Length: 323
Image (cartoon, rainbow, N blue to C red):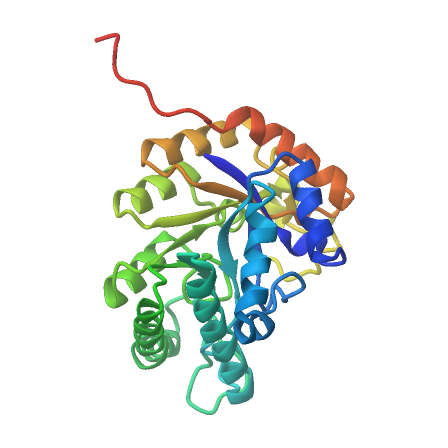
């Protein structure tokens, strides 16, 4: 396996300074934001698509340092009910796919998005329960009339440009938020649909990460992996459950908070996670996504990197020599 980083945390550093920081940390890969929610601080599709020489130099700046690009990330909401919002995010998606073709990157990261509750709605409507029956009607319309038709077209566009893996981060607030909903979209659209497996969003939902890896891995649906942890405050969960809309800054009051690797679920969980990935033959990049309020960016990232450097396998699997 390789260890990388989602470079948005160093958005204030110039591109090549960021790459030098990544090398200094001993990492192998970069995941680059190309717009929408992650921003495009280190990778601007318009500029690189307009100038082939600039695109070549951009890629060489990465590969000359011994790094690889694990994927391009343009997480947005391409099925947002507001037409301006929706068209902006779809435009970034298409530019990102075209840039992935130029840079020879087979994986593009995405959110599934979330529509409203009817044509002409103003805001997304994330359905979380089956009753009253209105909610099931909303959910049926969202999937059948909006989400599946859009991603069927988007997957065809990606295939035309050599992008064979659309990796969805399963994120609450969007229609794909757990393994079941990911596989539902994959069944409807095709094998280009898979996971950007981010454990942090599954941890707080109560998903057993090893079981998630097993069910997705058996379908060969894990395309990319984020390394991010989540701490669950047992007292706040006991009082209020896991659904929490309080600001991330209210860490003492929240039921859960993002942490650097090892400070949420503990080292043993990450040992089991890495082992499960190896068991389903995922042998690619773990991309550190660092969103920990209790550490500085550098210190928090370093602590996560140091732990994972000890845990991830660097050599191939062994043969069964003992039986």
